[in-house]
Image (cartoon, rainbow, N blue to C red; front, side, top):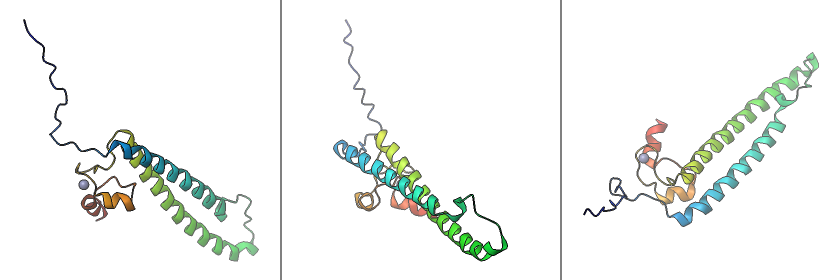
Length: 136
Ligand SMILES: [Zn+2]
């Protein structure tokens, strides 16, 4: 008679248990979702400020001076908006890492991200050294 041993199906996936403490994941997830909401509000506010968002803008010659200012305002707001967008994307990414239980683990090298880094930059999905490599 064979006794089927439940093969410890922990797979021992390369041995190390890289996991962010589960009790911290849910507050982090909440925090990140709140951040996204805040950023989306900010984005809407920026969109409302964008002079080019105003469709009724007139293209008369009297408006030419105003146009330069508008152009400038538009460029500035676009830059801010892009910043907000980039942040939203990054936070969404971090949030999906929370969902799959891989928060705090570098996307590239799979090592734990320094908790000091996560404290100041909770949406980080790369460790410091991978982030530096990417910036080059
Ligand atoms: Zn890394």
